[in-house]
Image (cartoon, rainbow over all chains, first blue to last red; front, side, top):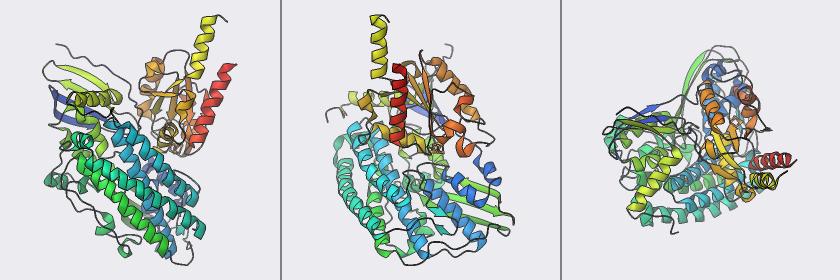
Length: 397
Length: 144
Ligand code: SF4
């Protein structure tokens, strides 16, 4: 039989990932998966070489709209290290605060997206509604909801007043209550378990071998967190737990993220009560002597690596960003192989891929020798329906 | 205007179906678009429904600069939409290329270099309020 390719829209409603997955099927089961990347390539590293250090801060913030603070913090730390500047402690505390608020917003967002992919839309709406509280906090502190631009080279741009502190604490307390409820839903609800347990398995050894990072690795029992392994900012002074789970599946990834939310609330409260007095910035000269620096940062999705080479001018000679999703994609192919077509959306969403757009999966059926292109929405529907036939149904809620 | 045309116009205005396409955005605009659909902003109260196929959509909502890889895809999606169709350029990137203007793998200028744009919604990222405002303005301009 000749091959048929049906291209369906390369866009989908619940945001994300510009990858293309090529899946080889044996009936309903996936035999082989390959990933194609590059739909979102904009050439930022090259662009960074033509901009000054200050301009680059705003450019690199836009590597990703969800973990923008992670990228700028990693970048400014590099610049400060190359310039040998001592950043005041109050600035570091504010960076930690915004960083943790960002983690909260990102994990809540992920929880919602995962719920949407399994067809549990009520939970999606709940988490996104509560997420507004964090966005309000960020807006209060920085003036913007998504790209906070709180960092500047040598410190931070805005201070925190006592009123702001109280307002943030109030909202965090509310979120803590809500998160307890989500943890209960995620861990006790049999329908969620039926969809997530034993799906997208990634054993400990494979996670190590494929270099998984962040919550994806931690859900496979790998104790890996830059905040603990190589503390930056103020993390060595703060008290928090490294959350791991040993179920090695999507369920574990849900639990790890939900429990990490609680840790983040703890960190936010600690930082707000700690806030040392002092200046917000130190002066850093615009031209920076030749140096080479690398820095790590635990972004919501895992370890983010920035490399910077300076050459004595006010522009970088070379800048390299390794975002956490790239590290995790190697594990996705493993998780998909041997799994069911119905689980594809959830497994891909479970690493919380952070890029945008063109995702579609090409399905190749060995038996009939047919190629078909599914778009995300079709796959999602297929997954929900396949599970409905097995008796897992969210429409009763 | 015949009654049937009036009816079609009425239903078009009361329930525009939108299609979201990310042509290389940083995700900032995308999460704000999804945000506009969730309970706090709830854009669905204007009858706006997010669709997943271009063949059902009236309005194409494009966020981000257009990367070279996405140009043919974007054009194809636009061609698949039924007439009359409208395009919304979301964010500084969609309007002018934003911070990415000049990058080697991005179309110089904004979205209007690739598709005819009906409305521009600026902001980096756009606020959900701005998206609602833009959509409402587009709809009221159709009324006349
Ligand atoms: S306008 Fe800003 S937030 Fe929107 S895609 Fe462009 S850089 Fe990202």
